[in-house]
Length: 174
Image (tube, rainbow, N blue to C red; front, side, top):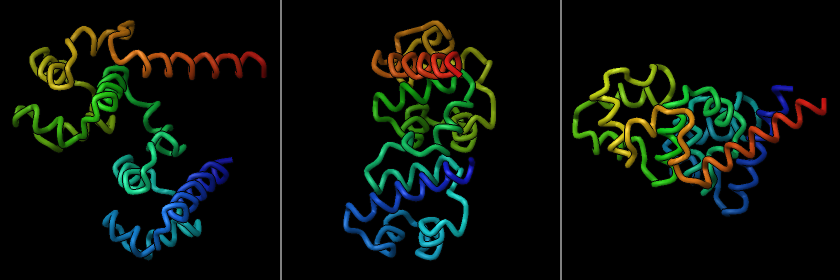
């Protein structure tokens, strides 16, 4: 079953590269990855990348939403609630990891921010740091850390609720 998911991502990427009339070499150059690695991914000689940063880079140059890739969704759905809401707000506002780092004006190191966003580290419990992060993305601290908050872009919240409802219905009918 895992092979099918990885196959689907490689196929999606291959189709999108073809739609954009890109060569593997041109695509590789635009992403900063080697043509050999891109070729291996597209020909399923290596597993589809699982690092969020790599998938985001591939998606960016294919003009795709990274959430279209199963590997990215799997990672995204495992994030702690506050980190997930942080990502959702960043997506709504078009903010990148780098933008968040710059808005925090050196209050947190870039690697630390990236580790939080990857889910490698828990969301900061220091109220001052957590508040700085919330403000940087245009939220209040309670809106960022409260799991019941619906302040984060209605469409994103609605999509999350709809996805949860769909999973619940699918589980119930099984």
